[in-house]
Image (cartoon, rainbow, N blue to C red; front, side, top):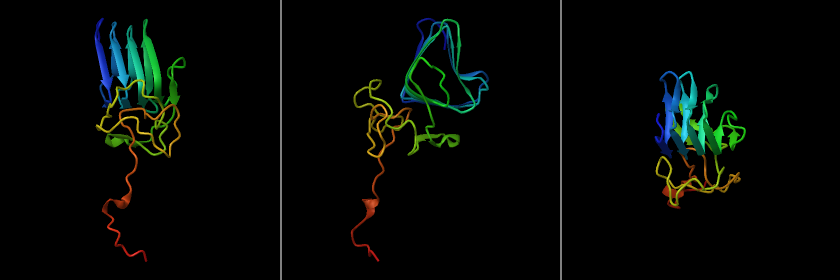
Length: 179
C-alpha cells in the first residue's frame, strides 16, 4: 500500500500464508497501517512480515508471530507504535511488545485459535476495541477466563478471543449408571 493519505485498517483479521517474495505487508510513501485485534503469521515471503518505508503503523492487541522470520523492516522516516503486541521477538523495544508463544491450535492448517497456555490470553485491556466488538469468529471480546491470570486485562491478543470450555453436561440426562 502506498501514497500519502492512504490507509489500511485491519480489525479482527488474519493475514497468513503469504508466499509472495519480499514481505507480507508493505506500507510505504506516507501510507498508514492500523492493525487491531489481528493475527499476522506464517510468512513464507523470505523477507519481513511487515515493511515500513517512509510510512507509519499502529499495532494494537495483535499477534505478529512466525519464529525464524524477520518481524519488521524499517526504512526512511517511518513511525511504529505498538501496544499489547505478542511476537516471537522484541522488534520494538520502545513499545509494548511481549515475547511469547500464542500456542495456535494448528497454524500450518490455518487455525489461529489460541491454545490454553497461550501468552496472548487475558493480556490487555479493551482500549483498542469498540463496545460489544466480536472477534474473527464473531465471538465476544473481553471474555475473562477464570483459570488465566489477567496480565493486562480480560482481552486476548490476536484475531481470536478464547471462549470458556462448555461442560459436558449438555447431553447428560441424569440417568447414567455411576458404576
